[in-house]
Image (tube, one colour):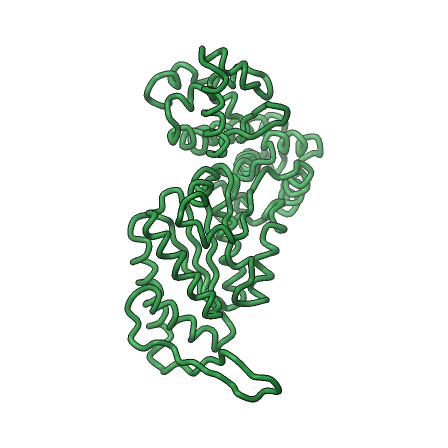
Length: 372
């Protein structure tokens, strides 16, 4: 029997080993246990592309299903509310037409004076359908989890309506969870608008790089579990090549494992695998991230790429032939977009590994209106 490649370098794919991310799901696990109103049941994951936001949603969905929860997974594109309403209606039909039982809403002291409530009849819109479904699920000690990815693309009216509905359901003490994911700038924009009044109370988890020691241990364990020999020094090189970047961990692991010679990683196959992973990163994550930026944003990044390490805003302004204030505006835009990070003491650096090298390799085409 041929062993399948254990690494999954596909956007959103659930990796066999969740490297350095278990703690990020602790609050959500507690929410599943504690029930309606728990903080972890309202969470927003943020971070740059490839940092594992979609994977976190996928993991949370798996945890919810294990607890018997109904899960509806969506991407924030046009028609979000109507699709959610249709999905919930489908779940209601799957549960059949049996009349839901009353739900206990209050119990007086010493157990006297029990108050119950019946769900609404003939549910029509999203709020009514969600309420009807949650009444049924609450009777079985489960709930409904809605996940929404790519919220930078969400229609503001849809998000406003969804937030209002979820807030109402929480007030009704119904078992509802809402998890979302988006790039930092999109989330920051949302939280600064009227739509964010309710969402400001959400747990916000900013996903960053994984410690290299965790990467080393994960790579070594995965290669050993699949019977492929890799030396400790080679594991170190592979881990360093990932920069602790989750998507690149999967890419490097995938290409190095695939190129192993007779179940053994050689120095040559390691180098070839790392190179293939970097090229794939550029063709997917890096190119897509740059495509979202303005020409001036990209010019700032090109000027940053001239440095061997973190850049000073004064140097970037000088290279651009602009004022420090002007360069600072675009620095903030790039920080919000998750493309660069604050490196301390007035310094900024690239958030995604190998972006510096990619920009240098594509300087000419990047200076034009079209991306490589």
